[in-house]
Image (tube, rainbow, N blue to C red; front, side):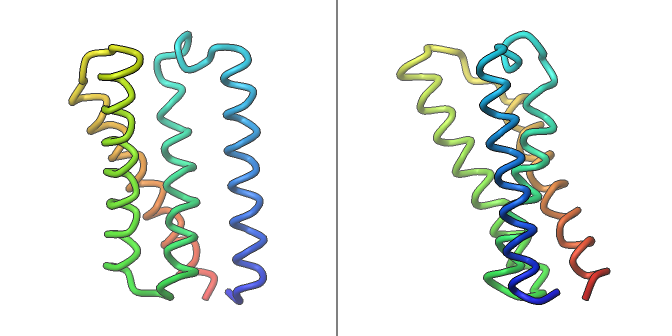
Length: 117
């Protein structure tokens, strides 16, 4: 896939995620639907996988580690916010689930792009 088409695809995914996120905050879906962050992490992983493909080409390990690094960084940020601002207790199962969906979204993006190229 050429870089221009990949850039368009990344823009579509990021605007989709941002739009759904805005609607989710307006209607309190993150607190009322226990499962709602799972597809959001998946599509976030798709975007990061596409970005990794854009940055690193078809280097599977680099893209995978990039998605993992961004996912772990987000979870560290979330843990700091939960501890210091919202005072929510740390939940290892939620964190593991979030990272799993980040990685599965990233792997889906890699597979999609490999099939396209």
